[in-house]
Length: 103
Image 1 (spheres, helix red, strand yellow):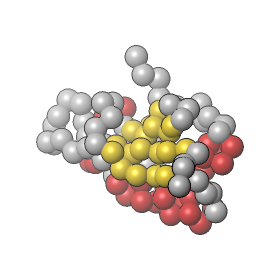
Image 2 (cartoon, rainbow, N blue to C red):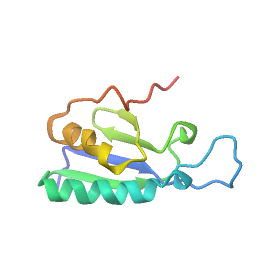
Image 3 (cartoon, rainbow, N blue to C red):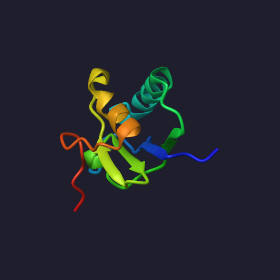
Image 4 (cartoon, one colour):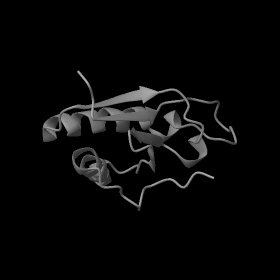
């Protein structure tokens, strides 16, 4: 199956106290699992949501990137606020509120 969009959620773990932080310590695995379930329950097809190793921006995380748009997001810690990703996955509309600005 060819996917229209592919979501990678950083689940990298660093030692506590690391200056870069750690997406895993910001509950990224739980958020990724929730996102998968939301997408499935919403009936969005032809997408793939999976965990990734370090995406290099844990200090801005929990980090997520959606392809083919190459859109980077900081996932909100409140699951109720994650519906913007479903909108992106179904329509391609980018949510500016959670979009990462990578320098």
